[in-house]
Amino acid sequence: MKSRIEVNPNILLGKPVIAGTRIPVYLILNLLASGYDSKRIIEAYPGLTEEDIRAALEYAEQRMRYEEVHVLGPAEVPAS
Image (cartoon, rainbow, N blue to C red; front, top):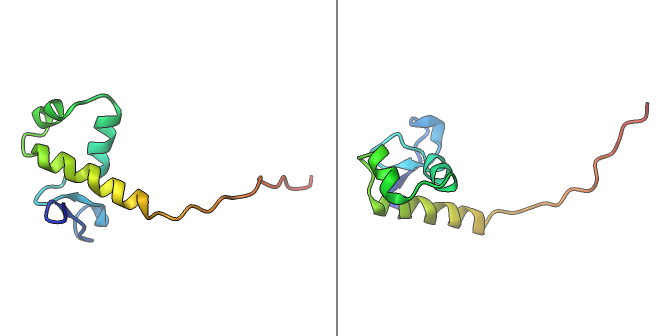
């Protein structure tokens, strides 16, 4: 996965992309969430491969696995 995902501050402001492209990981996740399958994504973005799509999913999973979540209390309503 590491060789397929690139994070470079000079490309899309450092957002993770498929290496050698300007296709961000979030775009692939969005397409999958919208019902696209791998074949349809590759048809829309011929430079991508099945391995690229799997790498995007693995990257997202790894980021979410170690993300810290801080539960916030109920929002306070300012006095009027």
